[in-house]
Image 1 (tube, rainbow, N blue to C red):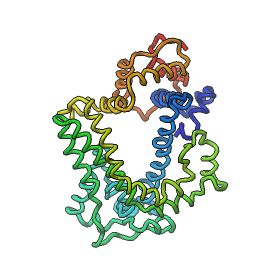
Image 2: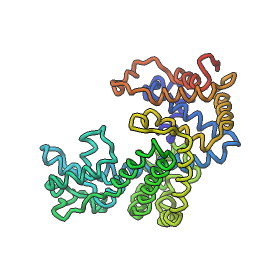
Image 3: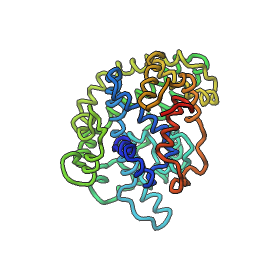
Image 4: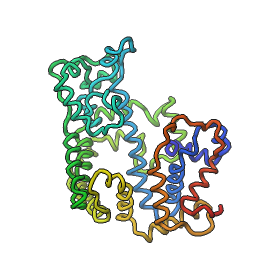
Length: 390
């Protein structure tokens, strides 16, 4: 969010404002700051121009799309027009609805939206099956629930959707089948790493193509156009226009109605789906060659980070990685060379695998003396070592 809105860039230029405002707990954004520095290097050097453009189009622009989708189908439609809580039973049925049709598609078959609150440490990918099992054992929970088939009514009226009744549609099990495919492939990681990675990648990319091609783009276009981004006054439009200093160059959010959500885009994806799947599988096979065997769940956890290193190594040679590190430390104002690649990887591993503190939400940042410059110094030490000098 801070990157997209330009707030991080603003705070970097005026650190005293950031430190006094207490808007940011700097100890919690070290890796975000490192990412921002890396993105700036990509944007400044000619040698990274093509990669920076691709990253801008595929990663940064997609964040706007995912936020838009999540805001609608995960946050808005399961609760819109719900009643105030007067008793627990009514609240269960009248404040949270069952996902159906378009919402069920984007929520990947979750079914009962209550489930992701009930046990948050359980994998979301199991919820389609769990929801279906609950419906079989306790059908009244399904029939008494309110459904989301008519999203037009939910969006453009102020009434709750009707009860599902006895003819309610079953939950979409496509995404449970995807989960089963991935679980089966994981069993192969100890014996046939390449085949395992290929099967996992196919399950994931085919699911993504399924969502993109089956979704109701006309609904997305109507909602997006109704936001009037870039076309008039209003808080949202003003916020977007003022702060998106890093607005996507290739696929700006205000053009999504004509680009990302266009029927032609889905048709193009469908026509090239075999090629897309083949290319993704090719990369997955290359990654599979580089990773170590993983015989069980514990080994998968232990070597999870190594999979991402293998992906980076597949795309970028070691020499190119070393050159980028030199450019990065120079951008940070460091005199001298960066740490060796192996050391930096282990530092990143330590950062990413460190446990989240139990009191993470009980931040004392309002009384903390840690400043933006202190954290930037830590970023420098990650890539250049503790004896480096700015």
